[in-house]
Structure formats: C-alpha cells, structure tokens
Figure (cartoon, rainbow, N blue to C red):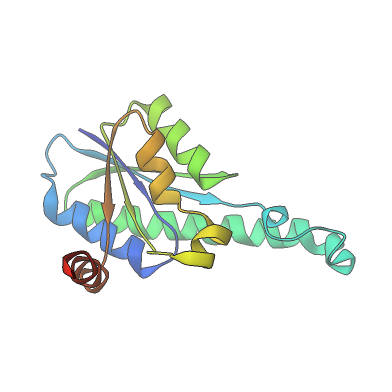
Length: 159
C-alpha cells in the first residue's frame, strides 16, 4: 500500500501521522511524507509591502529548509515504528500539489489533518482537506482531533 501523508507544522498533522502509525500495518506499506510550501506571494502583494521584496528569496529559502526538517522528522518517526518512508517538499498551492503528486505517484490513500476552519477563516484560507477529498483520484482519510469531531457530532445531533 502507498500512503501519501500530507503534513504542515500543526497538531492536526501530528494527529494524522499518529493515525497512520496506529491504523496501518508496516509490512508492505510505504509512506511518503509531503509538505507543500505556499509561496509568500500567495499571502501578500509586493505592492502592499515593497520594502519586503529584497528579502523574499531569503525568506523562501528558510521556509524550504524548515519544511525539509519537518518532513524528515515525521519520516524518521514513522521509520522507527517500521514503515518504509520517503520524503518530498514542493512549492505551490497545497491543494493542487497534493492531488497531483498522489496521482503521479499512484498513491492508494492520502492522509491529512483538518484544521476545521469555518466561516471567514475557511473562505480566506480555503480548505485543503475538502479540495483533496473532492478531487483526488484515490481514497482520502481526513483526520480530526477528537475534540473537533465531538463538537461536530453535537451540532449535527441537535434538533
């Protein structure tokens, strides 16, 4: 089985990684740990902060370095429990990169955490997990913290 574990530096990704470690057998399972670095231009326009433009390349390099370290730590933890792992860091839109990489790598499953954004936060930040679930060609498991899932069940069960 080939599992693409898409992570960021959040508790939600930590929970997703723990779920993979608990839920799947190590024998015959390969886990590719992936992080996508969104370009700074996705957040800010150079017209908004022109004094920042000379530093963008330096900041992007640092973000790439941090992303590689994050992915290496996660892969190392999964190797300790017996999984075969590989690592990848890409730059771009996480929704597109995760979906495309899973298809090109022929992943059987994508596992990722959900931040649980709602309202304006969801509108501004988008929902990576929702887009991946809707558009992926393979199965997707969205992992949520227990407290978030419990709150969602309470809201659904109310009359």
